[in-house]
Amino acid sequence: MVKALWHEQAGSMQGDRDHVIDWTKRMSDHIAAALLVYTGLHIFVTMQALNGHHGSILPYFGLVFLVAAIIPACRLFEKRWERLAASGESDGELRRLFNRDLVVLWLAAIGLPLVITALVKGVLALL
Image: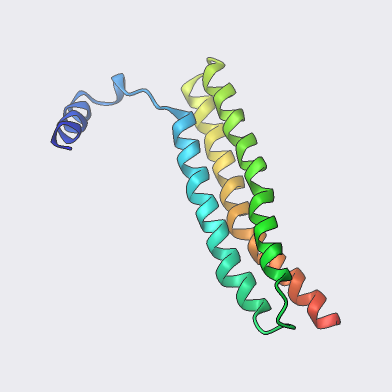
């Protein structure tokens, strides 16, 4: 730990000229966090909205399906960044693409559970 902190401090004294950004790792970290947020929102928002409706286990299977369905999409994001990092693109171009993909990733991680909850509540209101 001390060694890592010393290396970090020494690296910051050198400035950004020697700093190489690992775009693949950064995207992978964001994807992992977004999956946690997505799953947490589904558990606390969608399941709360379904609480007390007919006592069925079906919403829980739906939750498992929705979480499992988003994993291939996240893996596509990771593969995209593996290709982009190896492509030799300039750091400025990679930064622009990274920021755009982060916006898409986080909008999906936060927005999808809310949209799905609204749709489920709408369908339940019609029944």
